[in-house]
Every structure is written in structure tokens, then in C-alpha cells.
Length: 375
Picture 1 (spheres, rainbow, N blue to C red):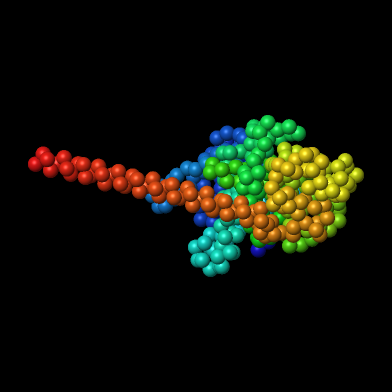
Picture 2: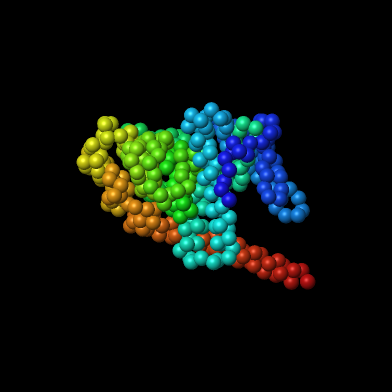
């Protein structure tokens, strides 16, 4: 059944500032808003029923967006709100499908890996609702904040950053983002506004993609809509007014994020042919720009090759999908290092547990010996 617009689902309830009700098929529960993070996002506590015994609270984020008829008529915030609502409905379907794949093991291992690895890097949505003139998304709370704030606090941005992001860390983040984007593309969603502001950091340090106001749920179809996102990270073809491939546009955006992580500066400040720097990037490419900046010697050949193949102005010569990004030698090496680090952490935990068991056994022997002497 086709999804209905939030305007068609508008509630007659009065606006509630400190709490919002979430409704599922069988239950209704309340989210209490405790503090404000940004102009549109609050932190709250949501009641859930873990079992038949009682209730429990867990922290969530609540995104509140105003819905007015004028904003929809004028193509303003209302249009982005409706598009985000539609994409979140698709994400909720994907989450249920992923849970079913994991529970039934009905798909191939490679497909399972796309779903499981990718879902970890998309902010999790719990439900949506409309109250009076506002539209609300109840989603996972990420205490690490957004990536832009993290980079600013670390002094990793600007022509002379005080603390540049390491190549290893940047590749690790890009690997997670590529997995998340592949999950979206597999589900028919293209983000179209990937930038540090729309990337969150969870309590475990994982990267999470959020904010789907510029997204489309028709990732397999050519698009001609101009993207109204952060132009530092927008593909040139996405603002040209011509038909373009939204998946390849996401590849460019990921490459642009990668470039900023490594250098502290955007490759293009504006993606228009008449703007300064565009013709230079088109002529010499990403590698040429880094060479002119004297930064090409700071990165490995694999990293430079990946950047160059993602940040090609001509989309026909660019990497065509996140599958190709993940299969690039730079990403394969990063994935191998991730597995080695995970195995090392697992070995440390196992050795610690073994040492604890040996210590416990030794104490038991000592206690038994002391008891024997007393007898």
C-alpha cells in the first residue's frame, strides 16, 4: 500500500512540547523529551516492554519538524520533511527485512553480510508520528554527536589543521560509510546529501548515517532533481539540471568526505563549472590537486588511487557503485586490518578470562590446603 503524506495523517491533538506518543500496531507508548540538542532534535526517554514483566526506559533522539501547507506549496522545508518521512518508512521496512534475514538465515552469506554490516552504520529509526503541525522521528541516540563537530573539536579542519585525521582512521570511517551506503542502495535508497553534518558517532564509536531530507527511494532510476544539500560534497552532475545516476553521485560525496578527512579542506567549494577551481580539478584530477598542494606524499598509493577514482568529475569514469568502492585494494586492506584488530581484542578477552579461571582455581587449592591443615 502506498505511503500517505504526513499532511494526510495530521492528528487533531494539540502540540505537546515535553513528550510525544509513539503508536505501533498493538501498543501505544510515550517518549519524554528531556533536553534539546539542536533546533530540531531533542533527547528523550522511551518506554518499551522488554517482556511481560514490566516497563523499561532507554534513551532516544526525537527529530521534530514543522509541517505547514505553505512550506509544501512553496517547495520548502515541507517537501524535505515529506521526503524524509517516506525514506524513513522504507528504512523501517528494511530493518524488519534484515531482522527476518538474520532470524531465518534464508539468504546467502554475502547478502547477509551486506545487511548486517550495513545496518550498523545507518541510524536506527523506531517509529514516526504526526502531532498537530509537527512531524516527529523517534530514532537512535548517538552520544558522540556529528562528525563535523568532532573534526572541529579536534582541530582537523582548515588549511593548517592542528591535528590531522590519520590515514588509517579516515579509511576506517570511509569503510563504515561505504557499507552503510551499500545497504541503502541495496534497499533502493540514495542519500544525496552525505556530509560530516549528516554522520553521527555512536557510543561504541561506530559511524551512523542520518538525515534523509534530500534522499530518494528510487536509487535505480535516473534523476534530474537538483540537490539542495551541502555543496562542498555534492557531485557536479547533481546540480547541473541534467539526468544523472544518484548512486554515482553518492560515490562522489563519499570521496569528498574522504578528501576532507585527509586534508581538512574540500576539493571543490562549489561544484559549478563557472566556479574557481572546477576546471583545475577537471583537468588534473584529485591527484593533481594534492600534488600542487604538496600533500600527495602524505598518503599511500592505494589511498590516492581510491580518491582519484571516486572524485572523477565525469561520472562515466567514476567508480559506479559502493560494491566497487568496497572491493578497492585500499578498502580490502582496511577490512583485513579491522578483522585482525577484532581477533586481537577477542584473544585478549579470552586470555583474561583464562587467567581469571586459573587464579580462581589456585585460590580454591590454597583454601583446600588450609582446611586440610586445620583438620
